[in-house]
Structures are given as C-alpha cells and as structure tokens.
Length: 132
Image (cartoon, rainbow, N blue to C red):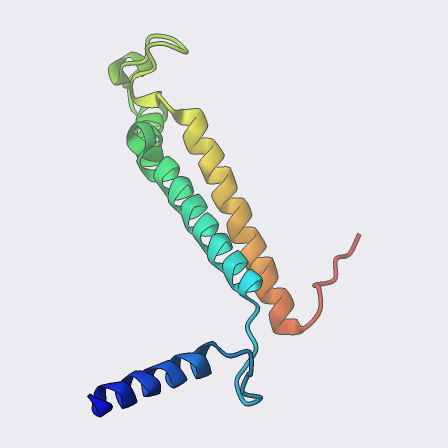
C-alpha cells in the first residue's frame, strides 16, 4: 500500500510540474492563437488548392477535353456539332463547364505568378525593379 501511495504522489507531482505556470527559459515560446491560426490557414490553402486543381482538371471533363475538342474543330474538318454542341447554355457537349475551367486556369496562373514573384523577392532581398 505505501508503494501505491508513493506512485500516486509521484504521478501528482509530475502532473503538477507539467501543468505549472513555470516555463523553461531554454524552450521556444509558442503562442497558441498563432499556432491555431497557422493550422486554419494551412487547411484553407489546402482546400483552395484542391478546389482549384479539381475545377481545372476534373470539372465537366476538365480543361484538356475542351482543348482537344477546340483544336480538333480548328485544325480538322470536324464541327462543334460533332462534339455535342447544339447551343449555349443547355447542350454544350464537350464544351460544358468551360467557364469554370477557364476561371480555375486564371486563378492557377495568378497563384503561380504570385509564388514566382514571392520567390524572386525573397531571393534578391528586394522587390524587382520595373521600368515604367
């Protein structure tokens, strides 16, 4: 029984030491609000990236389907009707969802440009100069 009491006291002392307000000066300081904001921002960015890539590559057949059909119409004797197009906005055939795909392509290019600009700014240490 004294061993059980000694074990309970050691557990209590360990728990109190863990939860005490005293901090080790050697440890880095983390703000829980900042950590929570970083987690939420990461989840938001992952969700936005998923939406962006899904809309670009999967939504209504993806951009590649529309590009293939458009190039076939431009460079071969095939017509829009061969790809199911009868008129906007109801029977668009292979071209259904083109607005969503183009918006996703625009956002993707904008995000790539912003990341490239951020990379170049960080690499040089200053914003690139423009001649205007």
